[in-house]
Length: 96
Image (cartoon, rainbow, N blue to C red):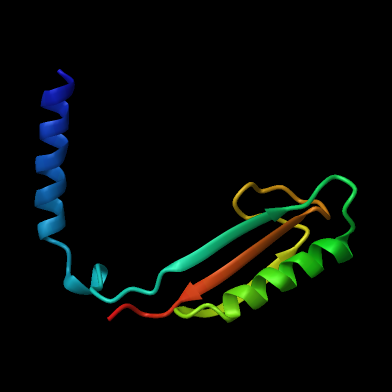
């Protein structure tokens, strides 16, 4: 039963994918970079910010990373909001 369902879903997916416009799935993509940081319980917001600055600097010096930015006190990946959390978002350079 599972095998039949898998074959049906694969066939349906293939037929739907064939109808997509090429602009929907570009050949050259820019990949996002998501980093979630959490420091130990006793860490201050300043310590979290300093750690994030260090990570941002490492990413800025890494070939292929176009830019990074960060959000203090919140993690988009875990939806947790406190001073121990830091969320970094980066953009990788286009492939090709």
